[in-house]
Image 1 (spheres, rainbow, N blue to C red):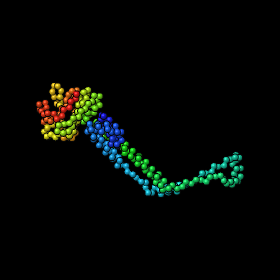
Image 2: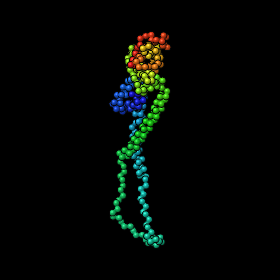
Image 3: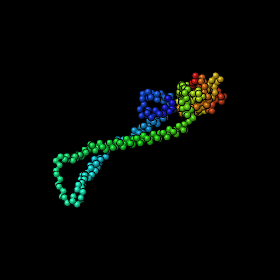
Image 4: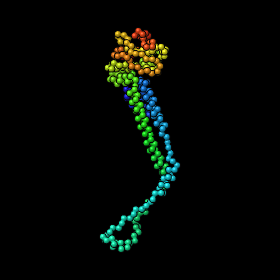
Length: 279
């Protein structure tokens, strides 16, 4: 699983909505890449903030009285009867004939009068309207959070360190490989490399403590000897470092403890605390 696929599943993992297979693959990738845990924590925090933002609301106590008052104030007017047709074609003659009294309509159906809605009906209508409003509010919050995290993700992508960018490039390569090994004195180190790219990245966590005048130095070891691939200082629990040397199949990526600035001789001065073969 590469970095992009991991980030696409992070929101689903935070919402506990992944299928068992996807969840297992996601957690395996998280163990292999502890530096991605920050994104997972951010998605979990966003999901928690959305859950806390929406609370249950009851309709106001005045809803029933307000509705009944509006019903009572609405005029109940009948329909005006249509004017009699001018059968004779002469308005004066038609006006002189007195109108006959209307006959009672024995088949007429009395108008239906709907009963006043009960309190439970009024409350149900009001509650449904409130619920729709809350759903709309929740959808708006989700959109805002999504846009906010999207902007933050773009900013993180543009400003990510070179080592993180190189790691993503390596993992997208068709010949990407990685090996994790335990470090002497404590901690673990994972080497990621691609022979086609000629690049390698070392991801380490919980390395053993060293003095202030010492640094960790990386080496690429082949049949001709060891070549320094750069140094990095201790301090952070997790370190992601791009090796400053090309890596080919069969080389060994090693890590030693040297004086600050690197070995003065250009060669390791101590035994490696971890050595990872790429063959």
